[in-house]
Image (cartoon, rainbow, N blue to C red; front, side, top):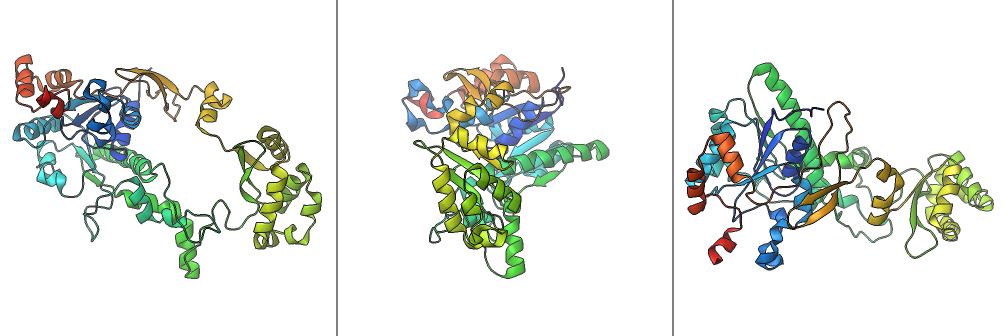
Length: 417
């Protein structure tokens, strides 16, 4: 079966980290030809550091995050600090459909690769710029990454225990990056549709902080109506109770549950043998439960702590109440539902061997997505790409490597050998 793009769209990915590379990876899943461009000195920082292990262990090829979010791409290297490297990149621009970059504002222009320059080379080129905070405004020059974007967008301001004394927490998974990447894919698809109509490309600016602000829409609305900043609620809901995470019997077993109505609360109480508690005037109505949520959670926690997680979940679900296990990573991978759908994909990659990686989420039977192609080694496809796309000879490519414009190992390693 054919993929969506079937190799007819070419993406030039000069971005680093997560947000930009994720957009490139998703295009690769859809069948686009994605060229990952790095430098042998300033390679993608998600590869990690050369100091992580001895050179013979090739540490920059062992990064799980890089190897996940760059699957399906072909990898080349170019020294963008050199005129020759910039000249070759511009030649790649001329034969590409999309350029993805997420440098700090001003960097791309200083390299001579701003939209005005690249569109003069290729008027059909769609370029997406993904700065953390935008290309203008008083904070545009601030450097950022997922966690700082979360903080600026207001997400961190809502993360904290309801009785935590105002302490706030960042999410460990840097939510700002994948949200920005997904918005980038959507924007690129829209621009491609517009190019079908006009025949011309365009510049897309996507400030990652703005992509994340809708995640706190309810807090922003609450502030506009009340004039007060919402307090941290932990796992609690703004209106419903009980709503939270509760510990079951055992070392570290937890479940999440939510009751939206009085009927659900009575069903939950009946399933757990808490009829007496459900009849308590403090807990009979929604407003009363919210007003006495500490006491409610204490009673519910005592009942749930007597049950193992599986039995507890069965009782609660049979009562028609929403509940789910709080799964650690091993439980996610062992989940029979996930396994039956073959979500995780085994991929063999040089240096690290065979591991399971997240598969493509969308299932499109007539145009399947591909998530089983390994991420490229540094400069792995230099000869292939430069010969196929630019018509370079073996001699020309060898000369570029000799003078350090391209390479397949970190520059520090080469100079030390």
